[in-house]
Image (cartoon, rainbow, N blue to C red; front, top):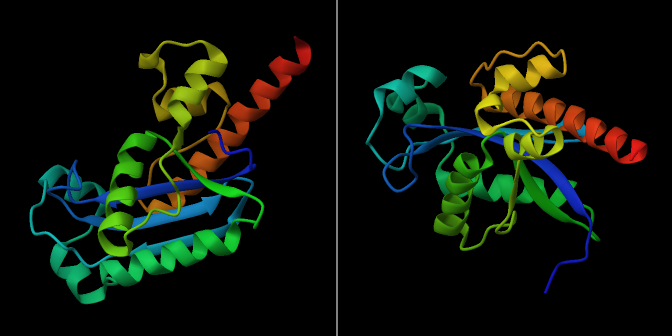
Length: 188
């Protein structure tokens, strides 16, 4: 049965030590409300696995040793993230993860929520910005890179691989796509 409640759109980005939560640690989480990016969350996690993909590690600039010393234990990090989600989601609403390549970010977040809290406050759905853009504009999948989407909306964006910065950029992109979709709907 469909959930009739409105959604609270939460842009989420993560950095990880590799491509899969079964083998690699999630290193940081950044999140913000799509419609109010100043309402934000950021945390770095202590690694819970030792396997690393060198390319993934070089992107975010993290080291496992550094995060062991300064990161938050995963259970505490996921508890803090769940509490933030609950605090920014109005009672009559439900949270929905929005991501640029949402399947990647969602799989890590869902895995960690279930592993450490036994539940995922973001549920079992996510809204992918790339797919939304392709649907609104009709472009082929190969034209949904961050560079192409930002260029379409005349936005200057460079991935910093800081999860919060990237979550805020995703929110900006999503709002631009949504505005185009609303303009197209109004003109139809």
